[in-house]
Image (tube, rainbow, N blue to C red; front, top):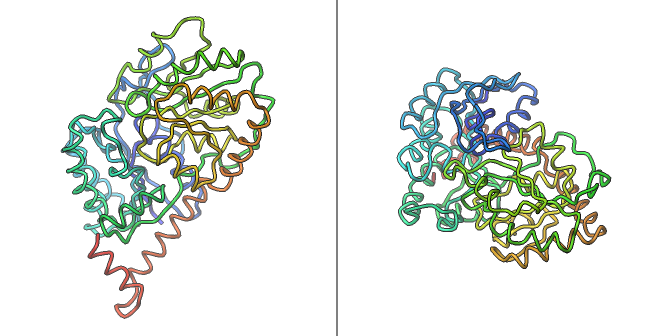
Length: 419
């Protein structure tokens, strides 16, 4: 089976590049799959910086060995549909798999380029290719104001049309039950399947508790910072945590969101020098295991959510307790996937302080939460996500080939009419 995977891909530092990498890694392991990645062009990213704030020189980084990557589209440009469709035609795959959020092709400030990029799944289907989309958020569940998006009302109106276009793909995977309910109820979609985000380690190892609290009890916050993932509440909470837990240390990892250059650097500059806070900047994929294995608790200091949390799933694969803002999407995720998470009222530094102290001050609770999250992580590996998705795609492709009298074709006819 020839598969084209469309998405950002390392060494690009843009959103979802790590997820595309893990999808690609598992797809390469499937017998009989011939994989081509249709990825974004590499540019100088002012949001991908090292610990000194120096931009990473993405264009001079080499492609990952062993992957067939065609860099055929560019973030923020109007020509992406033409370029992608030409690349798809040249590869002539059996399946085109898209790994997307609504801002994959451009920021909300460039709505034409963003929307045009999202028409490609429908256009590729119209050309005769089977198209599948892994959709990481649904805009009806996004708090645009909290995420710092301008002209949010206009974006909400446009998202209705864009969502209907995306649903013209043959099949869609969403990662939270609420997303599927919204797409089915509001849009009448019949081609939506519920998946899980998945964990990334092929063979997760149980947590090694000797690496934690030795000597520091590390609180990790990791993400793309500056929009809905923000650090102010965490910075307000940490001094009180440190007062109660003297060996606590706060580690902030990750790049700025591409719309908020300089954000984490400004937060770092505002912190008192005596506090044990370390800002790492962008963390390379190969350094992630060491980072998580030495972490006592992961914190998700979000003001809103735009989908299932990648760091939360990484916490599960390494068996790390989670503290996160009390946001419906995050509750949905934790309950659906059996995660051990402690919630605090969004924006409430006192509640965040209490949640962190409650875990860091109790070795027994730390261990129990760690073991629960590790168990959850082993139950939702990326290998399982890819296998289940490919099985579902194969089943739908078989339904399309059934004779007109078969019940399976009737189901596919309703898909055609409902998008």
